[in-house]
Amino acid sequence: MVDAALARHPHHIHLCNAYTLALADTDPALRALLQDPGAVNFPDGQGVVWAGGMRERVYGPDLFLNVFREGQAGGLRHYLLGSTRDVLDRLAAELRSRFPDALIVGTESPPFRELGVEEREFQARRIAESGAHIVWIGLGTPKQDHEAGRLAALHPAVYVAVGAAFDFVSGNKPQAPGWMQRHGLEWLFRLCSEPRRLWKRVVWGHPRFVWAALRGRECKGAGTC
Image 1 (cartoon, rainbow, N blue to C red):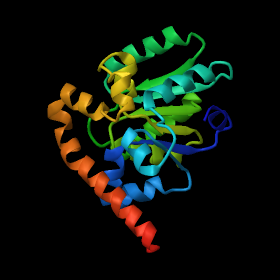
Image 2 (spheres, one colour):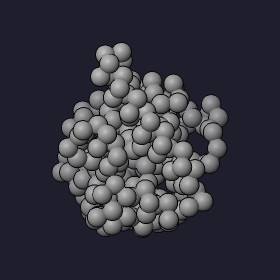
Image 3 (cartoon, helix red, strand yellow):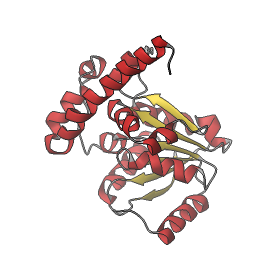
């Protein structure tokens, strides 16, 4: 990812968990976005790893920190887009503390509404003028995924829909213990931490993902996909 960003190869990267894929199963626009030639989809969710027969999970916060670490030597320029101003300030301070040579060239907390046409143009211009190689987007699923795809078509950089990494790395929200992550129970930890925000996502998203995964296997086995 670091090499692609430094070379300014435009990509939009998605950390896909069960909820992301459940939404894509019902939303043609999101499904088309994830299937776009410029998209790179990583399995961020133990259930996705198991269902896909993959070896390991690509955990958003770990990817975020690893790229910051590796990008220091090459002068990788980062732009942080999303969350609140308070979280962004704490996030930037934490990243600079951990990675003193990292280059954060912009932080932006957009309003919690759809941007107008001029606002979108100004946003794209700010990103381009910052010289960012990689733009980290933390706006929640699926908004962050659509924004990553939209921006990748406007300015050559790598755009990563990084989920809750902003909250976790900044210390705004707690992360699940490692043993819960390894056993596919992170969703339970997060549900207990934020029940009002996440209960619908779990109650609808997980069964829909399981159903879609089983349907896909049956379809593939029957040769009708």
